[in-house]
Amino acid sequence: MAKILVVDDDRAVQATIRLLLERAGHSVVVAGDGRKGLAIFETGDFDLLFLDIFMPGMDGLETMRLVQQQQPRIPVIVISGNPVGWDAGSGPDFLAMATKLGAVRSLQKPFKPAALLAAVAGCLEAGKRPSSSCIATGDVASGL
Image (cartoon, rainbow, N blue to C red; front, side):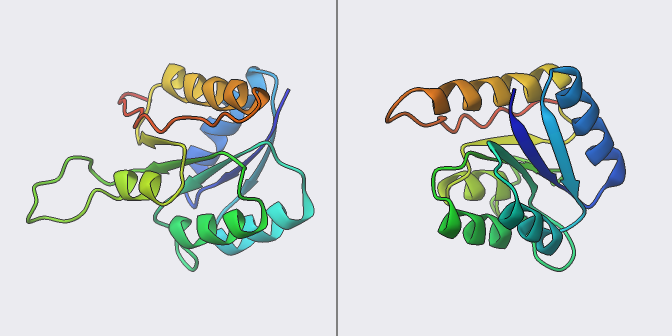
C-alpha cells in the first residue's frame, strides 16, 4: 500500500493514526515536530503526509511550505485540535487556511477513524489518476 509520514507532537495522536493506517495495510513513519518530519521526509519516498498545524519549533504550515518546495505534488492532510468555525472576532480557521495554502484535506481532532481512512483512500486514489489531485473537502468529524 502507501508509505505515509505522520508529523504530530502528540504521541497519542501519532499512535492512533499509526495503528489505523497500519491496520489498513500502509507503512507509517512518525515524527514529533516539523523539523524532524522534514528531515525524515527528505530521506524517504512518501506517498502521503499528515501534518499537525500547531507544533513546537516548526509548525505544520511552515513544514508544508518546505515540503511542497521539494515535492509539490505530494498530498498533505492537515490536522488540528483547535476549533473550526470560530467567531470572526476570536481568530482564524487554520484548517481552512492550510487548505488554501496547499493541503488537500483537513481533519479536526478528534476525528472518527472512518473519516481518516476515507481521507487517505481518497487522496491515494486521486493520486493514481493522471492530472488529478485530491480535492480539499474539509473532512471534519469528531469522536476519535
